[in-house]
Every structure is written in C-alpha cells, then in structure tokens.
Image (tube, rainbow over all chains, first blue to last red; front, side):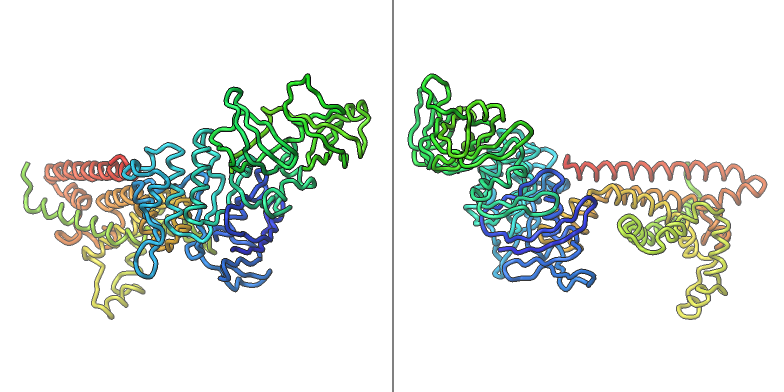
Length: 363
Length: 231
C-alpha cells in the first residue's frame, strides 16, 4: 500500500494530490495535460515535488515540508517503483534477453525474486529473446518492457498509457496480459490512461485527476457512477457503469443476455464470454432514449421501466435525466423532448437502449 | 619507399606524443563534457570559455602561457621540479602537455554533443529498474556514447599529430625529443637542400592522417551497428 501527499507548482496549475494506492489495478484517469505523468514521475523520484510525503508499506520514500530541506528523499533506484513507459524505452544496444535481465532482483539467498522463465512464458517472449529492440514491433516492445519491469520486482508497477502506441488488436492482447500480470504475480499496478474503455477493462480502483487535483478516488463502479464527476469522465461519455452476469447466448442472432439489477440487458458482439461470466456494462447517457410507453414496434431491444428522479442541465439545450430503474440510469435528452413528453420528476418512463451501443467488457 | 632511421624516429615520436595526449585527456574530457552537457552551476559559461580558449587564441600564445606556468621557474613548473624532479620544458612529456591543451576543446566538443544527443530517458528507465547511477553510467551511458568517444579520440589524435605552434614555443625543436612531424618539416624547409626530405615527411604525414581517419570510421561504424543491434 502506497500513501502519497504531494504538491508541485507547474506552469499552468499546481499539482496537489493526496491518495492511497491499494493492491490490484488502480487507474489514474484524466484528460491530457492534467498532470498524470508528472504525478507518477514524482512518485518514482524522476521529478522533485515542492513538498509532500510518500510512504510505501510503512517505509518512507520522501518527506519534505515547504521551505525546508527534504528529510527523506530516496533516489529512483531505491524506491522499488517500476515503470512501463509509453515509449517502451528498451536499451537499444542489448538483446531482448539483456533488457529483461537488466534489473533482475535477487533475494538474500541469491535466487531471482521473480523467475525469468515465468515472465518469458506469461508474456510469450521465447522467440524474441535474441532479437534487438529495433527488430521488434510496438506490441512486442511493450511486452518486453512489461517483462523487464516485472523482473525488477517492484512493489508498485506504474504503467504510463502503455497502449497508446498500439493498434486495436494488440491493445486487447496487452490488456489481457496486464490482467494476468496482476493475478499471477500479485502485482500492484498504477495504470495511467485517458481511455474509459481501458479503465472499464482493467481497473479495480479509480483515481480521477483534472487540472492537477484529484477529484475522486475509490472503487471503480462507485466512483464512475457519481453524477457530479460526469464532466470529468468526458462530456460525451457520461453514463452508468454496472456489473452483470452472462446468462445466455443466442448464437443465431449473436445476442448475449446479461442479467443486471435493472433486468436483462441484451447486447451484441460479446466475444469470449461464457455463461456465468461477470461483465461490466456501460450505458452512455447519449445512447439512451426516453419514452412514456413501452414499444413493441421499435428496433431497440433494451427497454427499462423506471421513475425520473432528477433533471440536470447538461449542455445548452440538453438535459441529463436521472431514472431509477433498480439501477440509476442517466439519459441525455433535448430540452425540446422533455417539454413535448411533459416529463417531470416522478414521471414513469421507459429508457430505450439499442443493443449495439451497449459497451460490455469481460471481467 | 624505405624510411631512414631519422624519419622513423620522427614518426614514432609523433605517434607516441599523440597517443599519450589522447590517453591523458580522454577521461578529463569525458568528465568536462558531461559537466557541461548535464550540469548547471555557477561559472559554467566561464569554464566553457576557458576550455575553448586554445581553439581561438594563436597557438604560440598558448605555448607562451605554458612556458610561463610550467617552465622551470613557472608557478607549477618549479613546484613539479622541486617536489618530483619532473621537467616538462624541452621534453617529450611537455610536448604531450601542449598537444593535450590544444586538442582538449575538440575532444570535449565531440563528446559533449554525443552526451547531448543521448536519450536521457533510457538512463531514467535504467534507474527505475533499481540500478545505481554509477552502474547505469557504465552499462547504458558509456556504451551508447561510444561513437562520440571514438570521434573525440580521432579528432584529438589528429590535432595532436598536427600540433606545431604551442609545441615549438613550449618545448622547442629538439631532435629525438620534441621534433615531431610538422616541426621536422618546418625545420627541413629552413635548410638548403632539405626540401626533398621534407616532401617525404609531408607524404607520410598525409598517409598517417588518412590511416587515423580510416580506422576511426571503421570503429564508428562497428560501434553504431552494435548500438542499433545489427551485429
């Protein structure tokens, strides 16, 4: 468990962050330029804060009060905070094997803390070992970078947008690998991203950062469904995240039924899930339509009955409607529709969602 | 063309002086280049100017300064003589010193631009893998700096081979001791009938320089292949 309280004046704003990092994968999510990368550099000792304190499992890594000399300031190599950088940073003059072995950590009896064979197998590196970094593809480089960091046996592994330079197929591969890394090596990971998809896929916990300050942190789903945080999670991506369980597959139509607190949700294109798998579902507010009656002559498969509990101004001409369907859903509708349907708090409505717009990710 | 004993002596002396010059300056030049490229400190631009001075003042002036400072009665020269019985003036060791002073800025410049071109993020990455700064320097910085080191050494060596003004001023022109190639050529041109031998030395001098450049090109190509991983 890492605890940090940091302050650093930057050009446009002051980075001021106070948080704890539990085990599992924590996503550090925020728009570009919100101070994410600076924050992790401060943790790793690659940049110096103005004041603050960092403690890692009761060991002090950094401690400084303003206008004083730092009481504790361990250099990077003594912090046991590993990095997987966006740009891989493999050593060009060494082979893949040389890169992997570079930071290898031995325990007191001289055996490797993390076995290189395990890492090579998990990340499927066997065929790459004698290649040089310049002969690797982006995805391969990223796998080597992950392996190299794992072998240095860090207490915390920081991944700075590791997927940003990869294409979609590679992204999914690496995402799965990162989950395996967490499970097999029991590795605490701080995962920086500005992609909500990656957050939904991976994160157990979420830290939301904007303009250098932490707006929220906590378990993922709780944090994501907080309405006051919508503007941060991305204007267009506001919505609800909830958990469900796969109950049936209709292979003829390629439709999967997921049981949730709001009733069954029909989604399409769910690959690689089995009956009984837990999944996360995200319904974006902009994908939900409202109706005052149930429809049978409409293509929208998902129809949830509920009661309106709140209206909120969203963007000009658009209101955000909160509907209690057993789950709290949010729908973004126009002011014009709100008046035409005579919607009020307490109105009984049907929330309609096209199956093809439902995001679901396996967990 | 066979070389006379006298010519052979001139060549070996020149190569000896240039080699020692590079050996003596390499580590200080590396340190200075690193200091100038990576550190900020008070008086940095002054230090930078002083190091570059030998490139811009006439070599004879540099030789004069060496004479004043390192001569028998110079501040450092007298101390060296009294404490260690070391005489630099009129000796080949003095020639090494004057060549080193003259080639130092060239070596620093070559190595410095190499350090500035290094991706500092690789060193950062190495540190986050739990390796100490010294280990990182030896395993990441130095190997990646090899091409710049080779180019610094070549430039320094070539400059030392050609050094004339500071050397002749500081250690004079003593056959077998301080008479290097350029000084020998100059001397031969001063005496009647010396032109024939001077021409032979001119050719040797050109060949020697070509050899040095060829060798360094080969080494540089090898080391840069090594870095990019094509070996």
